[in-house]
Length: 238
Image (cartoon, rainbow, N blue to C red; front, side, top):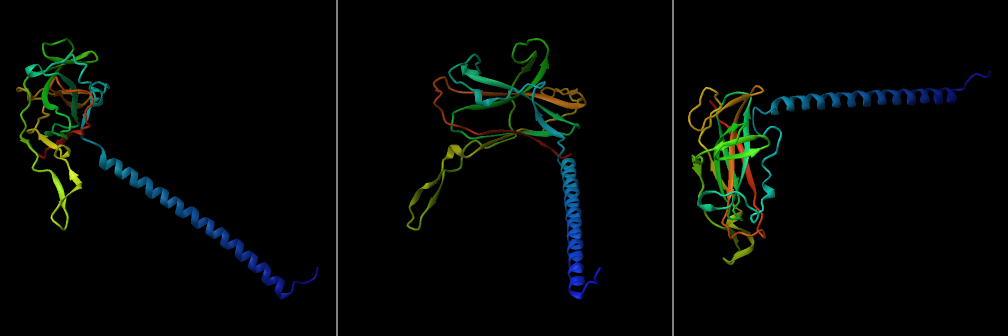
């Protein structure tokens, strides 16, 4: 075997350097990917811990009884005060603890609906004034009075150009400005059984039931506009 000259030795050394560089690069990439994955997993775990709810609005025994999009104003079998057609929906507020909360209702007014909230009690037998969900009945009495209510829109917003003319392209119609209904603090203390404060402990959760009533004038037709309705429960600090 002939001895390698200097050029051949340099070539072999360069090849070894190239292979070593590739191996080190691959190892670094694997380390960086692993660190990124671990960091992402830790972030997700932290986010999950932070965002676990302690207060939420829930279905009724697994049944979604709040499908507001199904309202047919001309197919009515329920009536509210003054013989107004209506639909009634049941929902529950649940919590891991007995802290107080406020109910908030926000809605636009493109459709002339009237919204009312009632505290309700769950029964397994039919009551005089009640809403049935599955095999349960939810009795309700007097409507809740809001602690705060925005009863009228302040104005219809619009822009004014440099000539002082109102521009039609920037109109925000008054009916698209949400109305706000906010309840007084609601208790989740099972020991409080005063009027309108009926709390049960269900599977370690504190639970309260409510009925949302939506009514309208009998002249309303189904060729109606679209509204946004938001129902929220906000914890009240002790």
